[in-house]
Image (cartoon, rainbow, N blue to C red):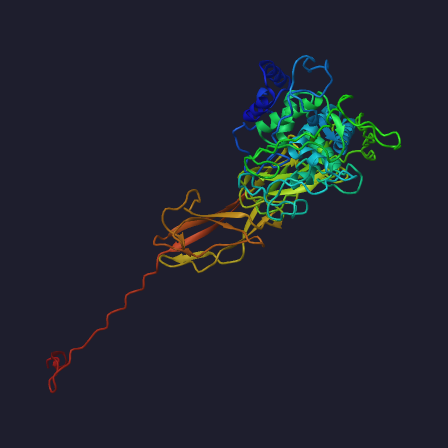
Length: 605
């Protein structure tokens, strides 16, 4: 930028006095090199230094940080000598009043936008010269005022494809409706809105039933509303800087727009549509013919040479030929009728609903609680209100679930956009708790409006039961080394109703049920403690229980959240010993013909 100024100074400064005058005018005009970057950026906008690059997605700027024209205005003012900020008449200045001319329709659009917005938002203090400064660096005042009678450009004005190659990377948001590109976005129209921003801020300022970014009336009105957003007061330097940076996040852009703004404030004049001076140098190093590194200078219109004094041999008119022009007098050119811009009907601006919102207010809903895997009976609800407390219809409110939770809105998402109804209310979609217990936050914000969010705390609790009852079954008895043949099934209820989903803890304890057993029965996986979930009918079925190797009495202790408790006795018996069989007496065999001594004995005679 300083090199560009140097070239201009070298062209016009032919003496030390001229250079001194030019430097003085530069300081008076607040050219970019003389403007420090803003130090207060508390409004949410982020300044980018002259050597910085824009954010990859062009977030937060109306233009997507597209290239802009950087040619500065001439260093003099178009005002009459003696006006504030004008060098004295005897001081040489660099001339160029054509730069101060603004095409008639374009000027009318800027002035009408200022009048309209001042009537609805006087606290913004929008000056039309700011719109003119932005229009100059964005499109050269609609390509020098090449617009039709309705203010629409004779051909679309499109910025480069925002595909991330040297520019921001913004995927298509309008299906190519405005920029003809269904893959990426492009800045559109004399004020260079990207389609996604136009969708929020677009206006129908000329009452033709369309919101057209290529119409200077519509675009100027939208740009004015955009600059006034976030309750900015453009009479304050800090707010003015934030507004310009919100349009294109570059300190060089801020300096260039401010230079033109100050230049136009010192004076301007109307020129016919299509005759405005086009800018030359763009911020991406290309000229208006899209040629890199080539400057196309402005060529002034030729002037009529002064007539020669009489007596220099010029022929005199022949009195015998009526109507013959007198060559001793300069030709006269009939005066052109003044160009009057088309009158447009005065209509109030269509202010986006989000711009009207002064605050979001939580609507009392009571505690937001629900058991795991169930639906919250109530959900977050907010009201969008203006500064007077009146409800605003058509505001898009974004609800977002934050925190460590698996709760979700109906449909499975963690975010949802809801539009306020006639009462200004927006209710979040139905909330459903997951399996995780604990608290989380639902945040509500206005889309496209930087105001404080409303936060709701929601809590997921454990499911509860106040009774656990065994369903049928015989006493639990088994022999060591075997498996209990009887099954164990429980029914969980809460206040007499089934309690599906409740978690039941089962522990095999000693005979007194005081502590978990260290020997004896176990579940089939070898553990003595497990947790089971009741099914949709509130039923809990325990797995098989192994008796173990130690006979004795044990207890199956069952509990659930909500003070539900029950115990079941487990008996392990040793196997019964079988009685030994009695021995059977046997008789020795006797040899044939021989009798046993006992058999042959006889009493003596």
